[in-house]
Image (cartoon, rainbow over all chains, first blue to last red; front, side):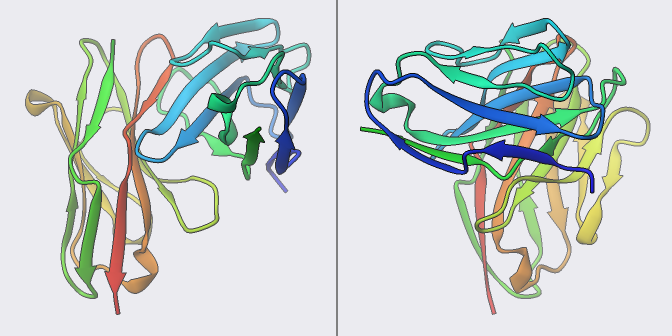
Length: 114
Length: 112
């Protein structure tokens, strides 16, 4: 089954404790992206990647890191989480055809930083 | 920088009513336009998208959207809503540099 998976689905942590949220897709998609969803703000793009070893900042990259060492994986790293990073995070992937490629979203990771 | 505006924060309709959700964007170049839907407790799913060609785009579940280039708009419509359409709807724009911008979302509540 074609899908995007994220782990963990729920995470409660404390300020300053490094964490990684994993994202994996099995569709051989070139394009992967991370978003955060906050009430009243919709989805805001954090980082995206056009292919292996190619990453770019989205709208709200501060406080986040990503890496794309393999095509299927795109982990999101919070080196020193802060309470304002409490949010619902979505990973998405799509086939980069240079056109209106559909993004497939993961189930989301709800992060709480105390 | 590109941006997306959705005019309505929360829309409440009765079943069988017609729906139109507004979406305007600001971007100077060629864009691809999308509407996504998020049902309660679920992740986002694509409703429809515009790439090129016919500006009237038909999507799943009876939804359609019209791209009006002169107005920078991509409004979502459905002639007759159902209770199962209760969800949050997001308009999104993808520009030439491949970054995506989403609107803040419109929550639709359909009363049975």
